[in-house]
Image 1 (cartoon, rainbow, N blue to C red):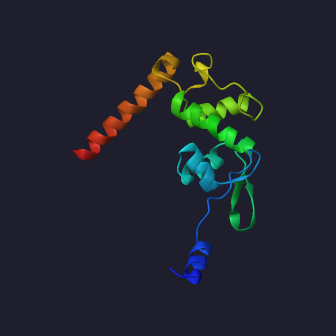
Image 2 (image 1 turned 120 degrees about the vertical axis):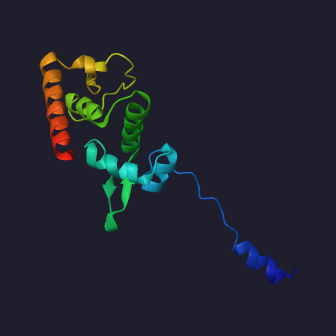
Image 3 (image 1 turned 30 degrees about the vertical axis):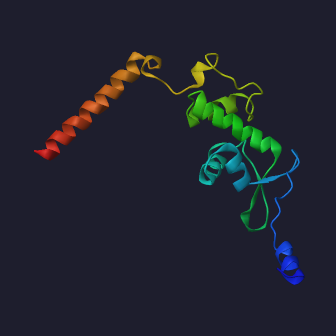
Length: 145
């Protein structure tokens, strides 16, 4: 290899970008890989949770502040590990003045914020649901005959 060849290869070498500061803004792809979530999930959560508000620059590019990433981590934990539904997390945020609580290790203490289970319905609600289901069944049977 000649000197000319060596210099041209060294100028084409790729370097690993320096690690960002912990206070740096992150792109949606960086947050996506950090949390192990697809980008469309992050965009969807923006529509469901007012607490998630990344900055948007020209062309709609999203830039997440460290507090946005922390909020997304808390939402991810509530949804994926603590068994909350989207409505349950929305209620939790609403009851905390529009923000996620500092301590979101929820376990059994906030069980009432989770979606209703059959034991949470009162008798009147269950009878109304049963009545609606019976009416649907009757309508279906009439249409099929």
